[in-house]
Length: 219
Image (tube, rainbow, N blue to C red; front, side, top):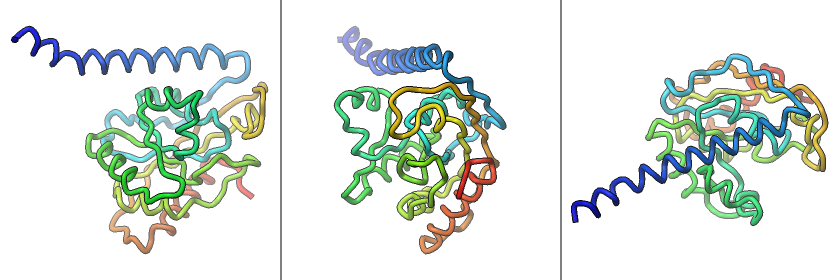
């Protein structure tokens, strides 16, 4: 019995180590494969492992953005993603492996918000793309009100991030990557303070302005 209990107690640890190893392999393969097409320059990288709960808010111009951002941060982060993308059969397993939080496209996002709050309470960072989708022309779009609601509920610092160059490498409707330099520039954390729910859109607008100030192209 004692031996069974020891095995049962060690299983979650072994599972965690196994998932960590798979994530490291996935990132290694990505950076090996990207070398012929683009290099990544990271500026003002935050020490997120020492920051506690925080939301990272980048612009979104390519499906490469999550992998580029994860590589730039080094420490594992949890991403939010629309359910339509999350459930795509050929890549769903990978999103589950990475611990992605899916957001329903046509239902109340209460469950997703609870998952975000649990992750933040555990001291882990969350990545939320305020635009809610990949830009079709590479330009910064308006932040979604629903994202502002999530930000206002979480009440943690938000770090704006400008990802530049991934649109030129692989735009939304592109088929093959093209050579181009990529820059990931982190801004200073924005404190939501005593934000009221009625101010959620104003706050997400402030975050989008901060992303633009870091260099994300905007019309």
